[in-house]
Length: 282
Image (tube, rainbow, N blue to C red; front, side, top):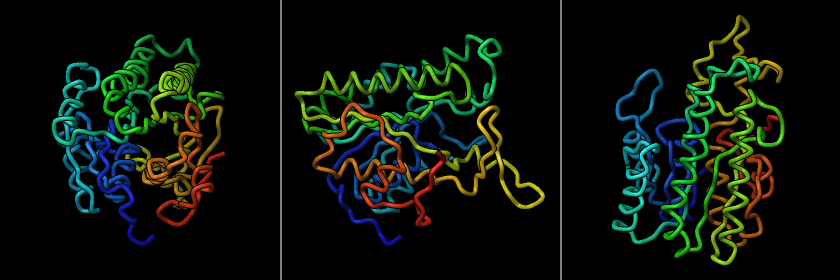
């Protein structure tokens, strides 16, 4: 794809959990569109998985945006409040908040398990990082977003409407989509848009560790859900293009309070993944 027009020049965004994966892909696309992007995460040195907040910020700069790395544990409310105070001090505005932070490696331990096989600590891990942290970031971001008529994107999943992975995962995503709807209700008179975004199967760094079989295919089987070819999955930047399209859409308020599949938004807005496809997992 040719160079992305700087349609978000002058805009300021925060993407949580952007050291790697979907968060990184979204942050890179916002940067490629010209935005200043604050990227948060706990990773400062690569570990079992590649990626750090500083590396993501540097890639944003290379793409023509401005990346700001902020080391932040989203279980620490004071640290999250400090993040948005920094955004106000630095720029006096916030246009986009993407709530993406999630503990995927922890969640992966319980894929395909019956609820009685999933310990209560998995519930706490899912809701602390995958729901509560989104609420906390939105609380501190809202005053800034109201000033600009900005955009909140909660990265969710079709697991909000059908069985995926396990009971805890589904209830967490359902809660997140309910949070989106209630945000939209409370923000109705402010001009701020709140949406949930549903990526498909994303070829993240974690899934890139899946080895190829004898025929060279990288297949992953999710118990009770099927077998998926990871080479047909979407890239982490595909959801990012959806966020850019929403951020640039002057009529996005018509979408507030609802959940949107990335592939559906691609067809409506006319963008593709980095390889020119519109991947669909369903």
